[in-house]
Amino acid sequence: MRRKILHVIYSLYRGGAERVIETQILGSDRGRFEYLVCAITSGGDLVDRMSNAGATVFRLRKRHRGDITAVTKLAALIRREKPDLLHLHNSPGMFWGTLAQIVSGTGVPIVRTEHNPYRPGAMPTLYRFLYPRFSARARRIICVSERVRQSYAAEFPRLEPKLVEIANGIRLEDYEKLPPRAECRARFKLLPGAKLLGTVGRMVGVKNHKLLIEALFRVRQTVPDVHLAIIGEGDMREALAAYAADLGVSEYVSLVKETQTIDYFYGAIDIFCLSSDSEGMPLTLLEAMASGVPVVSTEVGGIPEIIEDGKTGRLVPKGSAEFLAKRIIELLQDPQRAAELALNGRRMVHERFSSEKMVRATEAVYEEVLAKTASKH
Image 1 (tube, helix red, strand yellow):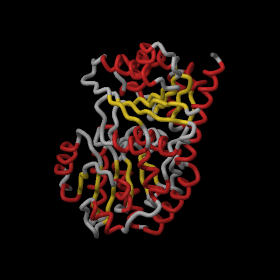
Image 2 (cartoon, helix red, strand yellow):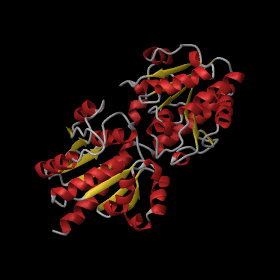
Image 3 (spheres, one colour):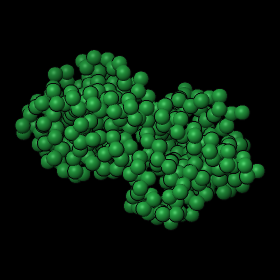
Image 4 (tube, helix red, strand yellow):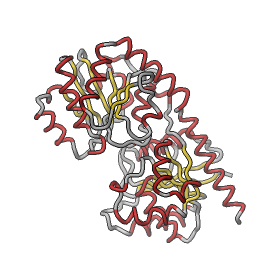
């Protein structure tokens, strides 16, 4: 008998959590599991991809922060579709999904995933207040890295028995045969000849792209023929463009809008750079490494679980444009060293971060929870 899993997430714009759901659906055993996906808001650019992956997609079209109709709509969806299990993602999924489970009166079991370390300042006050109470209703809380797991265990010790680490995984085959560099750059209208730094991520404060632009400014003092491409959506696009202008590097910075061919972006760049102030287990870093690109990243969240400094990439302190620039310059000036790090990184991702490992581990959590639920009835 196939079990029906309902994923609940705030939106379906292209982000790490959303893409983890897509990967789970694509790699799952369809003989055992059927997937529904519900976006609390109106959706996003992954709606079609979720449908094409084989999921049934619903959108609650929540209009504003206090729109409580999202609860009644989701509760009605739960009663109508009769899922065997709810899988709620991040704090909005926790809040709206748990409320809807209570209102539905169904008692459907809950599994949750936390995709980022606990940061109280990133949660609305109501979410923080209800977090331990609502978490008590979850059977298992998946954490995408050990650092994420530790952050919640430290803040909520009573939850520790429910916390389980399942590292993010990627579809390695998607990064095996990228087109030639010239073709990849042409897709994004990037210069064919320059040294190119690149990153992928929403243009929001926590990604700290300003740090990367400042690092570019510093790098160009030593290696003049270097450009930077940032690909993603977000409300800081104009602020980043203005910051690049203030530093006099506008003509060397490309702010590329989101596209469905992001995979090819890795084939266009010489070094992948991550400047975030907080991360859980960034898919973009895994993707860059699987593509054979050397990486330089801030040492935050679960990233040290991916990068062994000096072996599979380079790590730098959070917020340090100086160190970020220094490591980038080292790799630009020593291509052989950069190629060695890239090769080691690629091997490591293949060994540890495949989508198959993530999907099977998540299915095992579903089976455990469903078996315990069945034994109680």
